[in-house]
Image (cartoon, rainbow, N blue to C red):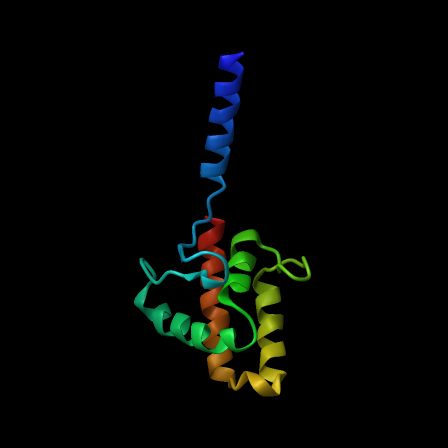
Length: 120
């Protein structure tokens, strides 16, 4: 009986380790955010921009979960490069987003980078 329990525990541990997301995050819950550790320099400014602009309407937790799971947490819709582009267009049209095309492009590029990293 102990052997079966240990085997099941080992399988669970291995499965959880292999399911770990590649994108590094900091914090938990509403304080969850993307980590800039190990991120190429070209994306660091975009991450800071995203962290400044996106939290006006929602926490970064929502974005982190979407990247990690491949699903938008509220709607359950796929969160892939096509969806990132659509969200960018949506945010560009929102009057309160206070973002221009250049800023949206930077955020879309960094989210696409995170999606690629998470897929590895």
